[in-house]
Length: 313
Ligand code: UDP
Ligand code: MG
View (cartoon, rainbow, N blue to C red):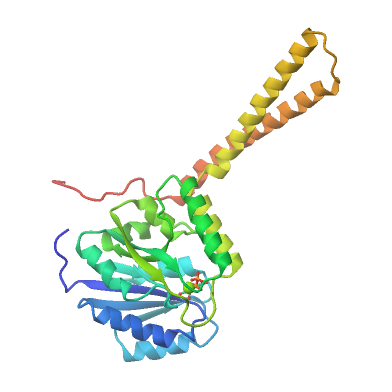
């Protein structure tokens, strides 16, 4: 990449949902971090249907600072949609996604920008440690990222959230993907490009409580697995094949016993029949699943391919 010129524009995208306790201090820290980079910048807040005083605070911040832009939703659409909306509105040459609650330290933005200046298309925050989160959250997150990685056909880096910088060309591809069940870190992995980790220690929330309820968390987790892995579908077929092999072995054993005139209860024949029918049912389900998977792929309408570079074209 050419050396990045300081007249380029950086867009910081901040989703906000009922965050009146942290917004003022968060704005000060983020504005300072952005101003110190020496680039032109904009901070785009997306108010995801907050019902507290967040919008009032955002109005007053935007009145005083022309760098600040605000887009407000009619209701709560969820974090992933709020971030996408901020990206739609962003005009920057690089887009940075950050949580408002200061869990993603604004100082790390400078490291991400440095990685971008050195040619990275994506600079993603990699959590070395998570401070101030419950054991439940830490454990489930640890296990989830590992299961997802094992199941996904595309590399999704471990212990990585949505805190990341995307070059404009990456963001443009990303914004072509209009799937409704969005899992941004998975989409980012699916796209490829040169992705560089930037390590950081995740702070505890500056104030307020998590806005990711257990229900929202589970929804996000299933969006990650269903959107980026067909393992749950193929598992059904593998189980069916396993059951079928077992059934055939059982049947052979019964035939051998019968030939050798060894007595056994006759209902074992019936059991073999029932298990065989079950195995066939599972295999037919798996076949339907394959069609379903293809329909799902088509409906997502992701780009067929992504060009990273063209020469003499
Ligand atoms: N958020 C949002 N909509 C929601 C839930 C959360 O815009 O429905 C925002 C929230 O204001 C914050 C970010 O998404 O900026 C991450 O949420 P939170 O810190 O509550 O999640 P956690 O860090 O606990 O996973
Ligand atoms: Mg948080």
